[in-house]
Length: 511
Image 1 (cartoon, rainbow, N blue to C red):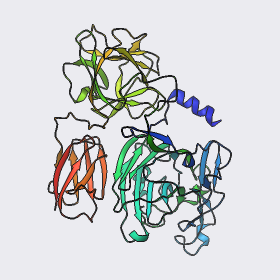
Image 2: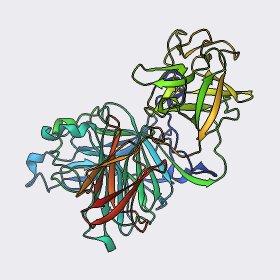
Image 3: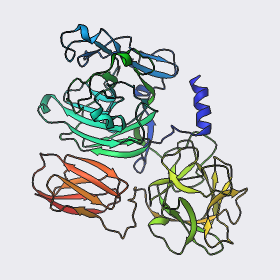
Image 4: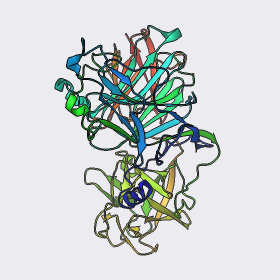
């Protein structure tokens, strides 16, 4: 049943298809089956998972109950239920009255270097719905601890918040947690969301939302041990462990099966191996496309205008006389086969939104879905045609129009449907500015945080004069094209450097 529903939904929207981060040159992502699960059977796979937490009873007043984690209808279901009336206990903050749920990987095989992603929907409770890693000797990584419906309405904004955190134990006991936060466009309980985590190295933790990198944590100490993967629900009676005072869950919500269950559609884990990325998933191909390269596109006739992504007008138009920041596109593999084009001026994917042949093609896609999927058809001599898989039509720039808006209306790849393309850069993910525009750091000197204007990619490195990464948390602002870097209190005064993914570097002083 889940397979049929998934095919139908994907045919309409492909709303949950996201790719892994672009692999380093000479590498490809390979699925780790031991930690991946589509949850499509009638019961939890006992070869992969404990259907309870074998190492911890839970956080009072909740305790994990075997049987509250089940699998049906194509989902892993973590239900929180009423154990006893809270009015019957001596202390409703410390005595057990809520039964929670947990699912833990059988093996401690989550490791640095892997990319982890799950599609989940939070419960409608004043409890956490979480995806995290622990049960090693000294480290904990919380990919997402989300509050579905806080009883304390003073923190109602938590319903939209993506909270990630790091904790330290054992030989690192006493070191304070280091977290990061990002505001989601929708409540966690209202729909399914994709949460991704690239444990890029022991010193770099990258967090993704619907395929886009939104946060980065450089932990206070290297996280270099293997851990168990965990899904669970917990009550947080007090402000603790990086979670605000959210209030206790309501009894009527715990008794309501439409509110009390966290759902996980799937979890998929990948590791890097030597090789070239493949493009499986359909008959569409890349046809010699320069994957992970930045290119320009130009009409092959008429006024020979370069194609620009006009973010303000929400359209692609072939009318530019030179290459600037608006005329840069990165070619990426599409997870369903073929390619996707990302406009670097606004970090959005080129999309064909409907089948109206008069509608303009626009740079407005937030991920690699059906509307953002194209075939790259090489036409020889540096020319290419793009076929929209969604509509079956080719992108077209009329030679007879000097201000030629790009539309998906070509029935075949002829003159108007071909573009000259030229590679502008290599596989690095560029900032959304031309290479001549400078980064600005403010304030400089800095005390506790710095704003870096000129990029909103959180994949930046902050290092000391010896090149050692320092513990920070980084959050982006697309509205101001900035990133905010907050320093750990352990970072001492001195000279430091910010290096963006495109290689731009700026020096600053911490007082």
